[in-house]
Length: 253
Image (cartoon, rainbow, N blue to C red):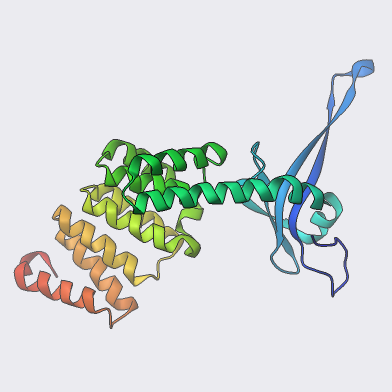
């Protein structure tokens, strides 16, 4: 656990911290103060900012992350190393093990066991990206489009779902949306990803495939050209565009 001081050689802040919020309730002679305590997972990003994420009622980090200026963090947040060791770390480990069991079950084709594990994980953290991806893929593999669509709507609202650390699951989910006939969802999904990064040629290639399967060839070719603008050596995009020009010249500029 990091020490909260200004020494240049100090350990960087990382771990569980608490903050207190003092509120006044009542008026006049009946006024009284209440103190509420919140726990946070915190990590120092640089010399200016600390990233914090609240712990939920299951004592795991969940929900949006925010930045707190370092000076403010050092004055308002207190380290909680014992609480991290005794409670938070074991809860996080338990959650990760549950998700791993779900993923192993899904890969083995045991979709009902996978659903059980992923649902247990989401009971602890309903915005857990890996558990949501896993559950969505499980539903798609079972052909339960309505349930998969519910997970899709949850995922497109989560910025964390489109971060590099989740790229493998992100790609698998998008491909499965398209392959299971959910082209509209696949397009919305990739559009959401493009909001996060517009310089990924593979995103444009994947959205082009979804538009092709919908029969919207002008948008298909447009995204193939954007993929090639970003990477002129993208072989699949080049072959795909050549195919469109050969077979549908009137719809491809």
